[in-house]
Length: 209
Image 1 (cartoon, rainbow, N blue to C red):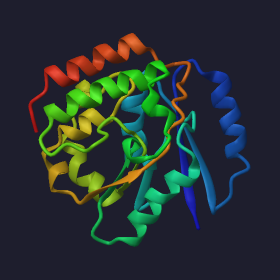
Image 2: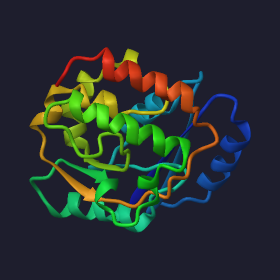
Image 3: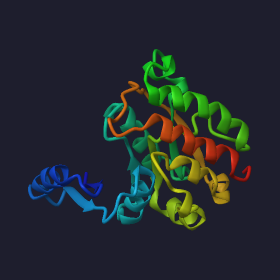
């Protein structure tokens, strides 16, 4: 199996950029590490968008750098996406995973996502059970259908998924939800109050889909 790992590094993270480039030098044709550095601080959401644009494979996966969701669960999304021709997107659902630490809401990130998941389910018609889960597997062909509808000017902060929900074409895609584990671990760069403000804006000042 061949795969490409795309890493987007924020401006100023020179040590991270150097370490990843060192690893990339040892990659091979079957396991490619592609490292890109943002010219300015863009935030995680816009970096994820850029990563999707850079991806060349027919199947693309988004996973968190903290690996709060183990590879075993993430791989299940990829398996379903590859095996089922009619499926366009596999979306993680942390509410269906038994004994999931995420559901206890012990970390600032988990508390924030549980709170705003409840709001976003009300906000978006036919919403997914876990709209803020960013363990996602998507066919590149499906991404091409929705990419032009994403409001780039609103891609701020941590979360890409609220922008995905603003695409009317997302509703036309075949999406299945797969249970995933989430340890609740948060990145040190996660700013809880900033992200709550961003999510508040996304939930109040966007059109219902």
